[in-house]
Length: 444
Image (cartoon, helix red, strand yellow):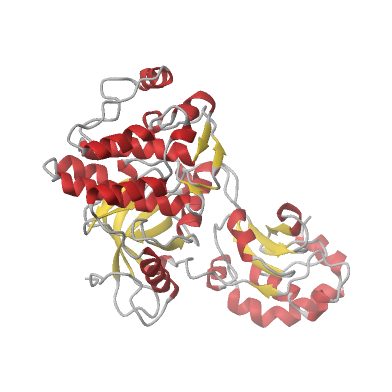
């Protein structure tokens, strides 16, 4: 419908609204300025929107999740009835645009998305029983929703699943000093809808976690492209790369590595959360600590049915997953055992050396298991072996493994509860103090 026909349909009511909003639209004309509105959340997906809207009338504005070749649109997401299920309780209304006008229902059009929102917050709209939507409370961006201006990219570190991983400086408003961080960049033109969901899924899980052996998460920047995921910078980078470069590590250091990884995975399983991609390549190492990272495949709960037609890490998959695609906490245990093998062998090769992925798939189903690292303590060899038992019910839990490793290595368990609180407190304070749990490196 053209803007002229809509004006005729709305008549004098439209003129009244335009007069009321003229000052607003003059100062907020142009699409880009919506970035300045705290209710605008950029490319935040539906799954995150559901967590933000609590009461009827709560709303956000975002951009539709892009599909290749399709134009993106602004979307007004509003909670209409909190008593209904998630799929029915939230309306996602496309803000249509043509000839410089914006509308969600044909009877009114506006000079900008901001003007549209302002009108639907007025008493006139609230008292109109025919209105398509009733807005009450704009939901502001959360502390983990970062602005691109707060992040300065300094140096490329490598290539990740979604794009470049770089070292950068993170300095938000109110921080005295910048912090060196790792920044995952995601360029949407190179990503499908599933990859974007995977990127945001990782952020969704990380923002709720606080543990010394889980990578620290600062937030995501999704108001523009490329998307940024900002995390702590581990001084030694990926664990597999560190192991390959440092083949002469002591057995004590390797013991500590597998114990720290066990503590991190124990924390995940206590929630419960399935990591689904435990491997040395998906851990970081810095300041003598292993930190589990890469949560793109993570799922909440203790069971997940995998689609085995998609690309999967065959060499780390448990028997039951290879057989029927089922994935449980005990499947993570199997992968943990594979990672222990990597740590003791310094990632000299992929697991099951000399075999193709097809051969691994077949051999594991036939009962083949890799040779247990001989340089490991005999008790640790037994622990690794128990991770690969055919019946997953016979495999130990991550909590059991951690206790056994503490006994064998004589390494005391830290006070994780206190450390976790400190991490969480640092992440929650946006102003006036350092956001890192450790002494930051000053930005240059």
